Image (spheres, rainbow, N blue to C red):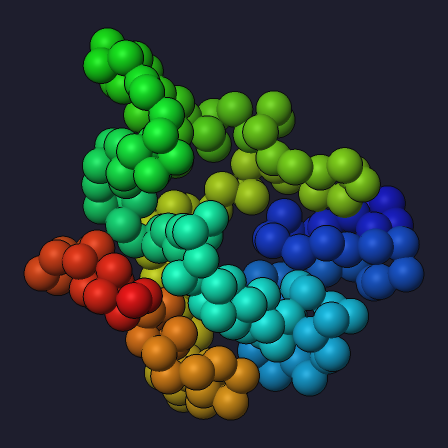
Length: 185
């Protein structure tokens, strides 16, 4: 592979100074254990938690809306309508089916070459950017001990309230969107 290209296409921003990317599971384990400075390495557990903590701290500001991926997966049209309403965007009723279809995981994955942001040219497989689209599927790569280690590390890096929102109600449990909205207030 060329310097800076991702070997596996997993999320991340390899640079010319970094070695080729590890297989996804190994990369995820290193990501969990990373002690990199959150401001220097955004693509690390400390970096992601720092970014999320900043958004969490601003969640009550009128121009901030936290949208949970599980809610988008469970009710894409409802979440899109909610977002349009909050932004005071009027969408003609007949346009909704086309807009919702264009925002589905499958539709975006089919158009990965156009939609995946890669200004530095480091993503080798743009379709891999849209790996599965199922909430929680990353946990399938880890043993129960490794997943427990993730939760232990996350607890050191973020508030219980943020983690409660982030890890709340999977699809199929009662009213995931309402539960997350209550946690976010």
